[in-house]
Amino acid sequence: MQLELNSELSNEWIQKSKSAKAELEGRNGAGKEFLGWLDLPEKESTRVQDYLHIAARLQQLDAVVMVGIGGSYLGFKCLYEAIHSPFKNSTGPQILFAGHSLDGQYHKDLLDYLADRDFGVVVISKSGTTTEPAIAFRLLWSLLQNKHGGKEAAQRVCAITDGNRGTLRQSADSLGFASAVIPDDVGGRFSVLSPVGLIPAAIAGLDVYSLLQGALEMSDLLKRPGDDNPAVLYSAYRSGLYASGKKIEIMVYYQAAFQYLAEWWKQLFGESEGKNGKGIFPASAGFTTDLHSLGQWIQESERTIFQTILDVEQSESPVIEQQENDGDGLNYLAGRSMHDVNRVALQATQKAHNAGGVPSLRIVIPEVDEFNVGRLFYFFEYACGISAYCLGVNPFDQPGVEAYKNTMFQMLGKPGHS
Ligand code: PA5
Image 1 (cartoon, rainbow, N blue to C red):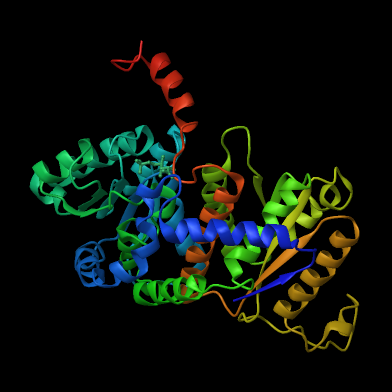
Image 2: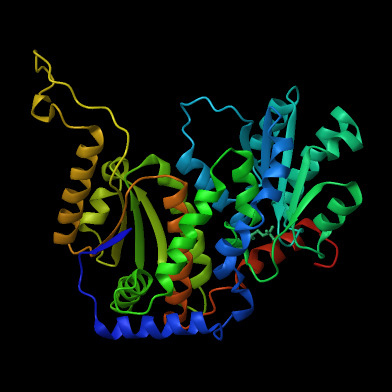
């Protein structure tokens, strides 16, 4: 993985980022009780066999529904969308999602779809009490019980939750679900390399070892001191720009596969940094598609934005053919792959946007596979920790998320919320 900067980096922010890195590594900063994610690549490698064992039973089914929201949803969703091709037949179960919204129509259609299919459920919630996944699981569990009876239905469920607390843990233990524990010291949006992401990945037939290997390699790299540490550079780049008035960071991707990487990244940085009246607003755009919608805004609107661009060196791609009748005028591209044209579009757009006053940084990875996504997960989590410390906020809490919940519970009449 390489970082290519198209804007000035101030030494002041490099030094601040290095101090923040020392704080993270020293495990003595704000939220220090939630730093378990730092060690996940190493620790979880020893548990993969258990996860594969849990996965094997669910892999026999027609479909498996992953139930969760926020950090209990986006990590695996991102990984799955990055690796899995919608056009290739996979041998395992169909992977579906639920509990990531309160959309009744979506859940009704899902239940109808599952009615005559042999399906299983992976329900993921650290607190074990989050409303969206709890409602979705109640609906799915009820359908499973009606179809198979309680004992058989329980064989089709895996719960990933806290080791002791929460109603989901109680249900898992009393009803005999397979289960796995989310470590106490790992918060939701930092949990993709725990069973939260790894068990769904194993069920989907993704290479879990390679994912962890990529994360481990990145963790070794990021531990190194020096001004050229990529997490220090990324933090210095974005923190410096924020201090100079650039309030919005746009994550730009050129591969459809990265749509949910951007969604995962938005949650990671948005929930970690956006507090105490501070924080970069994380946005995303899929180019070249969004060049035909947001491109104008980016080129010429208020100069409060900067871009972080994901660039992929290698990708399987069709090649544009020479045609005798050059009716569409594309013979000038003959012999070039679509991926090559996409990368030229990237370079050209970056140049144009830079000229229009939008600083940018390019993160280049060799290809999209489990290993490289593992690297990106760890890189962004680590850089997020450093950036939040630079900003002076605790990256590992999310007090603001409670505000809507309390109001909603009052309006719904939840006991204890009058
Ligand atoms: O990052 C976080 O902590 C949140 O986004 C949570 O993951 C999200 O609210 C879901 O929580 P839970 O796993 O407790 O259901």
